[in-house]
Length: 301
Image (cartoon, rainbow, N blue to C red):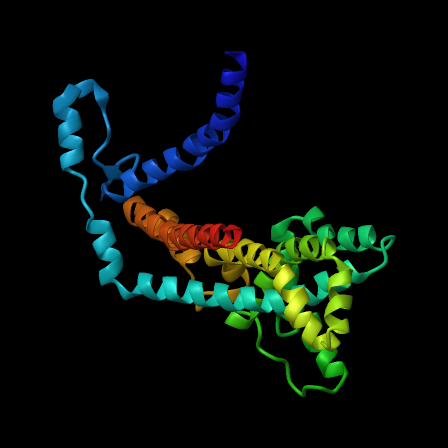
């Protein structure tokens, strides 16, 4: 019996964690999303009250509706925010992959005694506050910032470039901030790669470039997928970077959500925005995971 309870505890602990810290908050946010805005504390109605008995509970559920989700469809602001966020997150992830893969590959091919130092340099930015690191880019990218001063001193440009308060600044901020999340999983995958596979490919007639694309990249694919998820998911809902570097013209769903929640105090609409954003991220991931499981099962057969 003790062994059975030990196994149930081991299996049930992750599900209990998901229940308390994912499903329960999701249900609360969904309930607010189905409510209506009200001038009260909290600023929505109806309120769930068990003291009124079953009639109060029945009345509570009858007053829930999907008007806030219909509002998201009718107002182009929210649709444009989702499209802009997905677009910026996609290209930021692509840029992070293009920059991060060579770094991870160089780290994996470096001598063993150099790898801990290189790994520490990748992790080093995490020792500084995320907000401070984003603020530092303001001093670099602004009109009279370090980047423009350097380019003008080198004679590359005659007048300062306008980078701040543009999507370019947002791309730079996201790629810089989340680049370690791309490098680390790819490095972890490449570090375990058997070098004899490359030698075998070369012996069979492949040149180094062909061996790289036919051997190294497929073996690094799990790390690439993990890195893309780790960059893309937080980038979609990013608020700090577009607010500080993108200015008022940058449209992202994180900024829209913040304005609805704090400026407009429209908690039901803000909750509906959050629910749709969560579905946009979770559903494709679950579908991809299911397809990956089917592919692995087919290969095992």
